[in-house]
Image (cartoon, rainbow, N blue to C red; front, side, top):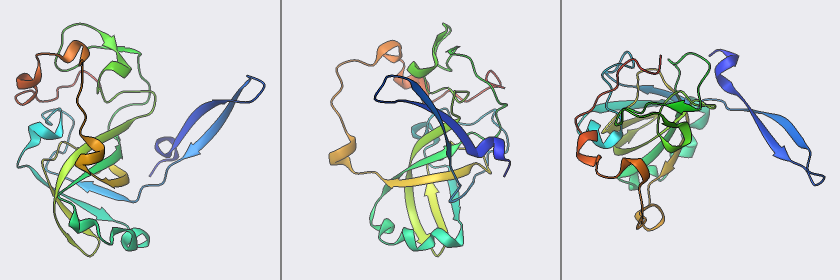
Length: 181
């Protein structure tokens, strides 16, 4: 994998208030396999990918970390948007709106750090292969982390959902296009 995709720069504030830039390096723990070979046509959220199968191929040095994961029906996947060119804008037109919005108020793939997150259904674990359902990830995406979905931790009552309010049903039908190339 190219170094340009594995390094992210962050800024932190020191005690004296100065910005200290540090480099953070992520190493993939595996690769996502899916039927989506390009970005166009992918469901825009995992909930809209209901029934779409995929696999996670975990690298051998991380297999021991899969112990006990099969006891969970759903997992969070954190991955790199590997097919998008470098660069981003801070205002984007999201898939479910015609108005430009701040990138952090969207789930647009071209972001300052090209990270994706999806909640998928875990069907089974066989050695280093995880069989998953409800996939909305392009084939070959570097997998950075897996976390169990735990309803008591992850379900929240929300008071507001910003510009997205009322667009829920539309998200099940919408597929990605080339707007973020």
